[in-house]
Image (cartoon, rainbow over all chains, first blue to last red; front, side):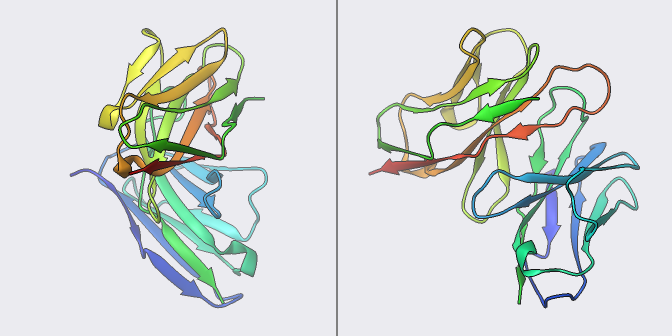
Length: 114
Length: 116
């Protein structure tokens, strides 16, 4: 089945130690998103890629970076995690970002910062 | 600026009873509206969407939603609730296409508890 896969499902990192979360998709969608979700709150969009074009949200901290080496893969890099970065990180895809296409979400990576 | 309101943090309903999860929105023009469900420790899962056409939209797992333009609402409904419907539900809105990127705005979520 076509899907969005996130690895790992659970990640523990130390304060200040860089961490990378990965996402892959078999849907061949143009758009890939990274969201941060805390405590069952609304997902907060960090950035998205439309094909290779990177789009950062204005309030996303510089501590968060992303890479999309090809259509299928996207990575979220947290350069120096703080305690406040502990959250669920959701990857999502959609066919397009401009009209009414729904998003398909991966299962998420729960990040713990110690 | 667009916004979505889910006025109820939690909705409790007895199994077998009809359920409604409320959503109102504010956006210029005719929006694209979505409902997603999230089970514990999982990602969001798409349920249904309104793009255009019939105001009553049917989706997955027996859910439906009615687009009401005059009331700017898009309430999620199901005729008979199941215990397995217990989850967190998010309403989302995207403004109509006007060229360029259109951001999706999510509501704060409503926790649905179906009581056996």
